Image (tube, rainbow, N blue to C red; front, side, top):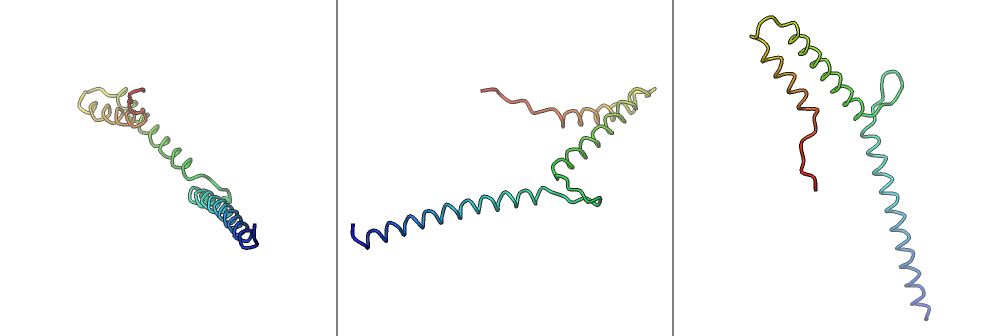
Length: 104
């Protein structure tokens, strides 16, 4: 091999190595960006995940609604308001149940 061919081959190897390193850096940057996007700092100095906080908020609201509806249905003496509370109860249960899917 002549000197020009060696330099061209070495140059392309360096380019490939540089691209691989840049790709690894880009992937690491995206991971950090996603972590920062999903992290909240609380007033007490701790960190929490946004998705966890959202899940617990939905769970608490749903449990309060279910307990309220069941209590109102149990203590009801007339059927005038029962449809409202049973509808509310079914809406919360339907929201939490997974959608039916065909198995493959």
